[in-house]
Amino acid sequence: MKRLILIILSVIIILPFSSCSGTANVPDEVRRISTFYAPTGEGEFLYDSKLSYVDYRSLQQAVVCPYPNCPHTDPETCSAYGMVSSMAMPVYYNGHIYFFSQKSEYQSDGELKIYSEIFKANSDGTSRIKLDDVDGGTVNLSFNWVVGDKLYFTPQSFKMENGISSNYTKYTLWEFDFNTEKTEYLCDLIEGLYIGARINGYFDGKLYINVSRSKEQKELSVDEIMTANIEYESYDCIYDIETGELTKWDKCAANGNGKYLTVGDEDKTEVYTLDGKVYDMENISGYLQIVNDFIIDGYAGKAIDLKTGKIYKALIGKDTEIVAYVDGKYIGKTRVMDGGNITGYTYAKYDGEEIFGEES
Image 1 (cartoon, one colour):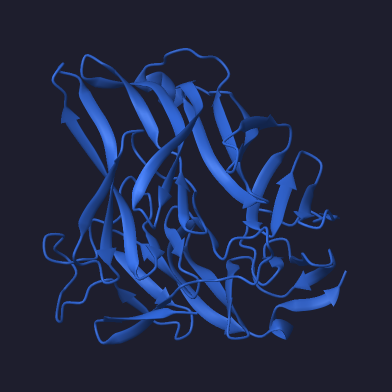
Image 2: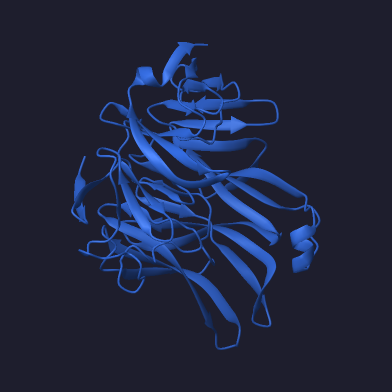
Protein backbone atom coordinates (compact mmCIF):
# COMPACT_ATOMS: atom_id res chain seq x y z
CA MET A 1 0.00 0.00 0.00
CA LYS A 2 1.54 3.29 -1.10
CA ARG A 3 1.21 6.27 1.19
CA LEU A 4 1.80 9.97 1.01
CA ILE A 5 3.21 11.80 4.02
CA LEU A 6 1.63 15.23 4.40
CA ILE A 7 3.08 17.73 6.87
CA ILE A 8 0.46 20.13 8.16
CA LEU A 9 1.29 22.55 10.96
CA SER A 10 4.05 20.26 12.23
CA VAL A 11 1.60 17.36 12.45
CA ILE A 12 2.57 14.38 10.29
CA ILE A 13 -0.49 12.98 8.62
CA ILE A 14 -0.54 9.89 6.43
CA LEU A 15 -2.93 9.86 3.50
CA PRO A 16 -2.99 6.33 2.10
CA PHE A 17 -4.08 4.74 -1.10
CA SER A 18 -6.91 2.68 0.33
CA SER A 19 -7.24 -0.88 -0.85
CA CYS A 20 -9.56 -3.73 -0.01
CA SER A 21 -9.04 -7.46 0.01
CA GLY A 22 -11.70 -7.96 -2.59
CA THR A 23 -12.70 -10.47 -5.20
CA ALA A 24 -12.62 -10.36 -8.98
CA ASN A 25 -15.91 -8.46 -8.82
CA VAL A 26 -14.72 -5.83 -6.33
CA PRO A 27 -12.49 -2.90 -7.33
CA ASP A 28 -9.45 -2.18 -5.18
CA GLU A 29 -11.24 0.82 -3.76
CA VAL A 30 -14.89 1.66 -3.07
CA ARG A 31 -15.58 4.77 -0.95
CA ARG A 32 -18.71 6.77 -0.19
CA ILE A 33 -18.11 10.53 -0.05
CA SER A 34 -20.96 12.21 1.79
CA THR A 35 -21.77 15.69 3.06
CA PHE A 36 -19.31 16.77 5.79
CA TYR A 37 -17.47 13.41 5.61
CA ALA A 38 -14.89 12.22 3.08
CA PRO A 39 -12.92 9.10 4.06
CA THR A 40 -9.50 8.44 2.55
CA GLY A 41 -9.07 4.88 3.85
CA GLU A 42 -6.96 5.52 6.95
CA GLY A 43 -8.31 8.98 7.72
CA GLU A 44 -11.03 11.41 6.78
CA PHE A 45 -11.63 15.00 5.78
CA LEU A 46 -13.99 17.07 7.90
CA TYR A 47 -15.55 20.41 7.02
CA ASP A 48 -16.63 23.24 9.29
CA SER A 49 -16.12 26.40 7.21
CA LYS A 50 -12.59 25.12 6.50
CA LEU A 51 -11.18 21.69 5.65
CA SER A 52 -9.47 19.52 8.29
CA TYR A 53 -8.01 16.03 8.23
CA VAL A 54 -8.16 13.33 10.92
CA ASP A 55 -5.53 10.59 10.83
CA TYR A 56 -6.93 7.29 12.10
CA ARG A 57 -3.52 6.03 13.25
CA SER A 58 -2.59 8.95 15.45
CA LEU A 59 -6.16 10.25 15.98
CA GLN A 60 -4.73 13.71 15.47
CA GLN A 61 -6.70 16.38 13.61
CA ALA A 62 -5.16 19.26 11.68
CA VAL A 63 -6.29 21.97 9.30
CA VAL A 64 -5.35 21.25 5.67
CA CYS A 65 -2.85 24.11 5.40
CA PRO A 66 0.99 23.98 5.22
CA TYR A 67 1.71 27.57 6.19
CA PRO A 68 3.38 28.12 9.60
CA ASN A 69 1.60 30.49 11.97
CA CYS A 70 -1.44 30.69 9.68
CA PRO A 71 -4.51 31.59 11.78
CA HIS A 72 -6.78 29.79 9.27
CA THR A 73 -9.21 32.68 9.17
CA ASP A 74 -8.53 34.26 5.77
CA PRO A 75 -9.84 32.35 2.73
CA GLU A 76 -7.50 34.40 0.53
CA THR A 77 -4.33 33.10 2.17
CA CYS A 78 -5.24 29.80 3.89
CA SER A 79 -5.38 26.68 1.69
CA ALA A 80 -8.03 25.04 3.92
CA TYR A 81 -10.71 27.12 2.21
CA GLY A 82 -12.37 26.85 -1.17
CA MET A 83 -12.41 23.06 -1.62
CA VAL A 84 -16.03 22.47 -0.58
CA SER A 85 -18.70 23.72 -3.01
CA SER A 86 -22.45 23.45 -2.35
CA MET A 87 -21.50 21.02 0.44
CA ALA A 88 -19.90 18.56 -2.02
CA MET A 89 -16.87 17.24 -0.12
CA PRO A 90 -13.47 16.85 -1.79
CA VAL A 91 -12.00 13.47 -2.71
CA TYR A 92 -8.49 12.20 -1.99
CA TYR A 93 -6.91 10.00 -4.65
CA ASN A 94 -3.33 9.08 -5.53
CA GLY A 95 -1.65 11.90 -3.65
CA HIS A 96 -4.02 14.70 -4.62
CA ILE A 97 -7.26 16.34 -3.50
CA TYR A 98 -9.99 16.66 -6.14
CA PHE A 99 -12.85 19.08 -5.61
CA PHE A 100 -15.73 20.81 -7.38
CA SER A 101 -16.42 24.51 -7.73
CA GLN A 102 -19.69 26.07 -8.88
CA LYS A 103 -19.53 28.50 -11.79
CA SER A 104 -22.07 30.76 -13.46
CA GLU A 105 -21.73 32.95 -16.53
CA TYR A 106 -23.96 34.58 -19.10
CA GLN A 107 -23.99 33.08 -22.59
CA SER A 108 -24.12 34.91 -25.92
CA ASP A 109 -27.92 34.55 -25.97
CA GLY A 110 -28.17 36.31 -22.61
CA GLU A 111 -29.08 33.19 -20.64
CA LEU A 112 -27.24 32.40 -17.42
CA LYS A 113 -25.37 29.08 -17.43
CA ILE A 114 -24.73 27.36 -14.09
CA TYR A 115 -22.21 24.53 -14.12
CA SER A 116 -19.33 23.02 -12.13
CA GLU A 117 -15.59 22.80 -12.58
CA ILE A 118 -13.37 20.08 -11.15
CA PHE A 119 -9.96 20.94 -9.73
CA LYS A 120 -6.91 19.08 -8.47
CA ALA A 121 -4.69 20.25 -5.60
CA ASN A 122 -1.75 18.92 -3.67
CA SER A 123 -2.60 17.06 -0.49
CA ASP A 124 -2.07 20.27 1.52
CA GLY A 125 -4.56 22.19 -0.63
CA THR A 126 -1.95 24.14 -2.60
CA SER A 127 -1.08 24.24 -6.35
CA ARG A 128 -4.66 24.06 -7.57
CA ILE A 129 -5.33 23.49 -11.25
CA LYS A 130 -8.59 23.22 -13.17
CA LEU A 131 -9.07 19.90 -14.93
CA ASP A 132 -12.47 19.92 -16.63
CA ASP A 133 -15.99 21.35 -16.78
CA VAL A 134 -19.14 19.54 -15.66
CA ASP A 135 -21.87 20.93 -17.90
CA GLY A 136 -24.49 18.90 -16.06
CA GLY A 137 -24.92 21.60 -13.42
CA THR A 138 -24.08 21.92 -9.74
CA VAL A 139 -22.49 19.05 -7.82
CA ASN A 140 -24.13 19.56 -4.44
CA LEU A 141 -24.74 17.80 -1.14
CA SER A 142 -25.24 14.14 -1.93
CA PHE A 143 -23.35 10.86 -1.98
CA ASN A 144 -20.49 10.66 -4.48
CA TRP A 145 -18.65 7.37 -4.94
CA VAL A 146 -15.08 6.38 -5.68
CA VAL A 147 -15.13 3.04 -7.50
CA GLY A 148 -11.67 1.91 -8.55
CA ASP A 149 -10.14 4.75 -10.57
CA LYS A 150 -13.48 6.50 -11.21
CA LEU A 151 -15.63 9.00 -9.32
CA TYR A 152 -19.41 8.88 -9.85
CA PHE A 153 -21.62 11.86 -9.03
CA THR A 154 -25.06 13.36 -9.79
CA PRO A 155 -25.03 17.06 -10.74
CA GLN A 156 -28.26 19.08 -10.78
CA SER A 157 -29.05 21.48 -13.62
CA PHE A 158 -31.61 24.29 -13.49
CA LYS A 159 -34.11 25.43 -16.08
CA MET A 160 -33.53 29.13 -16.64
CA GLU A 161 -36.37 31.60 -17.13
CA ASN A 162 -35.37 35.17 -18.01
CA GLY A 163 -31.97 34.65 -16.45
CA ILE A 164 -33.37 33.24 -13.20
CA SER A 165 -33.22 29.59 -12.19
CA SER A 166 -36.62 27.96 -11.72
CA ASN A 167 -37.70 25.06 -9.51
CA TYR A 168 -37.71 22.78 -12.56
CA THR A 169 -34.43 20.88 -12.46
CA LYS A 170 -32.76 17.76 -13.80
CA TYR A 171 -30.32 15.26 -12.30
CA THR A 172 -27.84 13.37 -14.45
CA LEU A 173 -25.17 10.76 -13.75
CA TRP A 174 -21.54 11.58 -14.51
CA GLU A 175 -18.15 9.91 -14.23
CA PHE A 176 -14.70 11.37 -13.57
CA ASP A 177 -11.66 9.32 -14.57
CA PHE A 178 -8.70 9.89 -12.23
CA ASN A 179 -6.29 8.64 -14.91
CA THR A 180 -7.39 10.83 -17.83
CA GLU A 181 -8.66 13.57 -15.48
CA LYS A 182 -11.74 14.03 -17.68
CA THR A 183 -15.45 13.97 -16.92
CA GLU A 184 -18.08 12.10 -18.94
CA TYR A 185 -21.87 12.33 -18.99
CA LEU A 186 -23.46 8.89 -18.56
CA CYS A 187 -27.25 9.24 -18.47
CA ASP A 188 -30.28 11.24 -17.35
CA LEU A 189 -31.78 10.25 -13.99
CA ILE A 190 -34.87 12.40 -13.33
CA GLU A 191 -36.28 15.84 -14.11
CA GLY A 192 -39.22 17.86 -12.86
CA LEU A 193 -40.26 20.00 -9.91
CA TYR A 194 -38.78 19.40 -6.43
CA ILE A 195 -36.68 16.37 -7.28
CA GLY A 196 -33.67 14.58 -5.85
CA ALA A 197 -31.13 11.91 -6.80
CA ARG A 198 -28.52 10.10 -4.73
CA ILE A 199 -26.13 7.21 -5.34
CA ASN A 200 -26.59 4.89 -2.37
CA GLY A 201 -24.09 2.18 -3.24
CA TYR A 202 -22.00 0.09 -5.60
CA PHE A 203 -22.35 -3.68 -5.87
CA ASP A 204 -21.39 -6.27 -8.50
CA GLY A 205 -20.59 -3.79 -11.27
CA LYS A 206 -23.65 -1.62 -10.71
CA LEU A 207 -24.55 1.68 -9.07
CA TYR A 208 -27.72 1.78 -6.98
CA ILE A 209 -29.40 5.18 -7.22
CA ASN A 210 -32.45 6.60 -5.47
CA VAL A 211 -34.49 9.29 -7.22
CA SER A 212 -37.49 11.23 -5.93
CA ARG A 213 -39.88 14.03 -6.86
CA SER A 214 -43.05 15.64 -5.58
CA LYS A 215 -46.18 13.69 -6.40
CA GLU A 216 -48.01 16.80 -7.56
CA GLN A 217 -45.86 18.45 -10.22
CA LYS A 218 -47.09 21.94 -9.46
CA GLU A 219 -45.05 25.14 -9.20
CA LEU A 220 -45.15 26.63 -5.69
CA SER A 221 -44.20 30.05 -4.38
CA VAL A 222 -41.41 30.46 -1.82
CA ASP A 223 -43.96 30.85 0.97
CA GLU A 224 -45.84 27.74 -0.19
CA ILE A 225 -42.62 25.72 -0.29
CA MET A 226 -41.85 26.75 3.29
CA THR A 227 -45.31 25.91 4.61
CA ALA A 228 -46.67 23.21 2.29
CA ASN A 229 -46.54 19.55 3.23
CA ILE A 230 -45.11 18.31 -0.08
CA GLU A 231 -45.65 14.61 -0.72
CA TYR A 232 -42.83 12.84 -2.51
CA GLU A 233 -42.58 9.61 -4.44
CA SER A 234 -39.29 7.80 -4.81
CA TYR A 235 -37.86 4.69 -6.37
CA ASP A 236 -34.50 3.08 -6.99
CA CYS A 237 -32.78 2.45 -10.27
CA ILE A 238 -29.68 0.47 -11.20
CA TYR A 239 -26.96 1.72 -13.54
CA ASP A 240 -24.86 -1.02 -15.11
CA ILE A 241 -21.37 0.47 -15.49
CA GLU A 242 -20.31 -1.98 -18.22
CA THR A 243 -23.39 -1.71 -20.47
CA GLY A 244 -24.52 1.82 -19.60
CA GLU A 245 -28.07 0.57 -19.06
CA LEU A 246 -30.32 2.25 -16.48
CA THR A 247 -33.23 0.18 -15.16
CA LYS A 248 -35.88 0.75 -12.50
CA TRP A 249 -35.68 -1.46 -9.39
CA ASP A 250 -38.49 -2.43 -7.03
CA LYS A 251 -36.30 -2.46 -3.90
CA CYS A 252 -34.49 0.25 -1.94
CA ALA A 253 -30.71 0.04 -1.54
CA ALA A 254 -29.20 1.68 1.55
CA ASN A 255 -25.49 1.05 1.04
CA GLY A 256 -23.13 -1.04 -1.04
CA ASN A 257 -19.35 -1.25 -0.75
CA GLY A 258 -18.66 -3.68 -3.58
CA LYS A 259 -18.69 -6.80 -1.41
CA TYR A 260 -22.11 -6.27 0.20
CA LEU A 261 -25.39 -4.52 -0.58
CA THR A 262 -27.83 -3.55 2.16
CA VAL A 263 -31.46 -3.36 1.06
CA GLY A 264 -34.44 -2.13 3.03
CA ASP A 265 -38.20 -1.97 2.68
CA GLU A 266 -41.09 -1.24 5.05
CA ASP A 267 -40.79 -4.60 6.79
CA LYS A 268 -37.07 -5.43 7.08
CA THR A 269 -33.51 -4.74 6.06
CA GLU A 270 -31.42 -7.39 4.33
CA VAL A 271 -27.84 -7.72 3.16
CA TYR A 272 -26.86 -9.36 -0.14
CA THR A 273 -23.43 -10.92 -0.66
CA LEU A 274 -21.55 -11.60 -3.89
CA ASP A 275 -21.92 -15.36 -3.42
CA GLY A 276 -25.72 -15.05 -3.41
CA LYS A 277 -26.41 -15.21 0.30
CA VAL A 278 -29.11 -13.03 1.87
CA TYR A 279 -29.17 -12.20 5.59
CA ASP A 280 -31.85 -10.52 7.71
CA MET A 281 -30.24 -7.51 9.44
CA GLU A 282 -32.85 -7.38 12.25
CA ASN A 283 -33.44 -3.61 12.04
CA ILE A 284 -29.74 -2.69 12.02
CA SER A 285 -29.29 0.46 9.95
CA GLY A 286 -28.09 -0.35 6.46
CA TYR A 287 -26.85 3.22 5.94
CA LEU A 288 -23.91 2.91 8.35
CA GLN A 289 -20.33 2.31 7.23
CA ILE A 290 -19.38 -1.28 6.41
CA VAL A 291 -16.18 -1.85 8.39
CA ASN A 292 -14.10 -5.04 8.36
CA ASP A 293 -17.15 -6.99 7.09
CA PHE A 294 -19.33 -5.67 9.94
CA ILE A 295 -22.05 -3.08 10.34
CA ILE A 296 -22.11 -1.86 13.94
CA ASP A 297 -25.20 0.08 15.02
CA GLY A 298 -24.73 1.72 18.40
CA TYR A 299 -28.22 3.22 18.36
CA ALA A 300 -29.86 -0.19 17.87
CA GLY A 301 -27.30 -1.88 20.13
CA LYS A 302 -26.61 -4.54 17.50
CA ALA A 303 -23.87 -5.54 15.06
CA ILE A 304 -23.97 -7.94 12.12
CA ASP A 305 -21.12 -10.02 10.73
CA LEU A 306 -21.76 -9.73 6.99
CA LYS A 307 -19.69 -12.84 6.23
CA THR A 308 -21.93 -15.09 8.28
CA GLY A 309 -25.11 -13.13 9.01
CA LYS A 310 -24.61 -13.57 12.77
CA ILE A 311 -25.96 -10.82 15.03
CA TYR A 312 -24.04 -9.59 18.08
CA LYS A 313 -24.73 -7.12 20.83
CA ALA A 314 -23.02 -3.77 20.10
CA LEU A 315 -21.30 -2.29 23.14
CA ILE A 316 -20.70 1.20 21.76
CA GLY A 317 -22.98 4.12 22.60
CA LYS A 318 -25.71 5.50 20.37
CA ASP A 319 -23.66 8.58 19.47
CA THR A 320 -20.66 6.56 18.25
CA GLU A 321 -20.16 5.25 14.72
CA ILE A 322 -17.40 2.81 13.79
CA VAL A 323 -15.88 4.27 10.64
CA ALA A 324 -12.71 2.27 9.95
CA TYR A 325 -10.54 -0.70 10.84
CA VAL A 326 -6.82 0.16 10.86
CA ASP A 327 -3.91 -1.92 12.15
CA GLY A 328 -6.22 -4.33 13.98
CA LYS A 329 -8.18 -1.57 15.71
CA TYR A 330 -11.68 -0.27 15.13
CA ILE A 331 -11.91 3.51 14.85
CA GLY A 332 -14.90 5.08 16.59
CA LYS A 333 -16.24 8.54 15.78
CA THR A 334 -18.44 9.99 18.55
CA ARG A 335 -20.67 13.01 18.14
CA VAL A 336 -20.24 15.84 20.64
CA MET A 337 -23.73 17.16 21.32
CA ASP A 338 -24.98 20.48 22.65
CA GLY A 339 -28.69 20.03 23.10
CA GLY A 340 -29.81 18.63 19.77
CA ASN A 341 -26.89 20.05 17.79
CA ILE A 342 -23.64 18.34 16.78
CA THR A 343 -20.75 20.61 17.77
CA GLY A 344 -17.86 18.31 16.88
CA TYR A 345 -16.45 14.78 17.03
CA THR A 346 -14.03 12.79 19.14
CA TYR A 347 -12.15 9.70 17.94
CA ALA A 348 -10.98 6.58 19.74
CA LYS A 349 -9.53 3.14 19.00
CA TYR A 350 -11.30 -0.05 20.08
CA ASP A 351 -10.47 -3.74 20.24
CA GLY A 352 -13.10 -6.16 19.04
CA GLU A 353 -14.05 -7.24 22.58
CA GLU A 354 -14.84 -3.62 23.41
CA ILE A 355 -17.39 -3.49 20.58
CA PHE A 356 -18.95 -6.93 20.23
CA GLY A 357 -20.98 -8.57 22.98
CA GLU A 358 -22.68 -11.92 23.06
CA GLU A 359 -24.17 -13.39 19.91
CA SER A 360 -27.95 -12.87 19.66
